[in-house]
Amino acid sequence: MRADRLLSLLLLLQNRGRTTAPELAAELEVSVRTVYRDIDALGASGVPVLADRGPAGGYRLADGYRTRLTGLTDAQADSLFLAGVPGPAQDLGLGADLAAAQLKLQAALPGRLAGRARQIQERFHLDATAWFRDADPVPHLARIAQAVWDQRVLHADYRRWRGEVRRELHPLGLVLKGGIWYLVARVGAGAGAGDVAGAGDADGEDTVRTYRVARFLAVDTAEDGFERPAGFELAAYWKESTDRLDAALHRQTAQLRLSPRGRQLLPMQFGAAGTRALADAGPPDADGWVRISLAVESEAIAVGDLLRLGTEAEVLGPPALRRALAETVTALAGRYA
Image 1: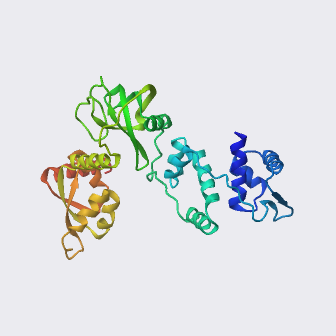
Image 2: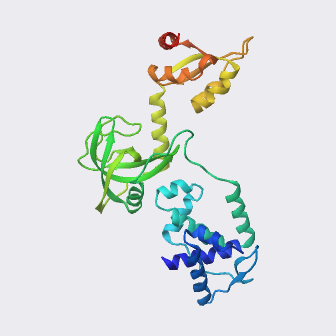
């Protein structure tokens, strides 16, 4: 809407001082001609916009002028919680609200604090996406987020590894983990067994589950709402769920010898589990190798994970895992002979 654009233009001039028409056009995603028309409209409404000519010229507000039109809308206030993660804010449909909210916030701050806010934006950036992996496509995320906010029932088609299912869900919250969006939801009446992250028991009414948002094939928002479970806390549920998943995945312990280079690789390949294992490592031998105990997943997965350490590690046990790794290495050697 033009009124929103005029307000954004006014706040840009107030926050940044002298700014050229092309810079304003790029920021507002409009043509330079549109900026000229909007500048004329601001002037006609009594806003003292001055035009400085020359190579260092541009538009600015008269000295001492400050607008008080800095009230935040509900959507803009909500988006401030995601001020450090512009990509996820865009996924949620709050990108424009986030930009407008930041402008209003800067305009409302005293000069010293506004300058500090700009310095923070210049010096810190949060990229929530994991390395070497594109973000999940999440075409239904904005609708799901709205249903979470409005406490509206969702009817959704979901893709499991066993096939597609239809679900009635009571959406309780969204979590962004390693660049991947998850929906935490209570399963509505009539749902059968479901596939969710970190759970294997059958779904039933009042069961709270976790769904990967990228696996939703279709989402419809119902007219009826629902009551949130008494005492439910999203952060507490997520921690309990992830702890349970970690315990379920890491069911055995591998005994390893690691070279000095292997000790450097272990945290990069195994994350927190690798860091914990190194903290309890024994003293290095004459060659600088140490012995550790590392929590690993099932044998098939552990073989692939441990191969990433290459010749910088030796599996000492358990015997079945050592044999499996030896058989894999032998097969590889035969293939590349």
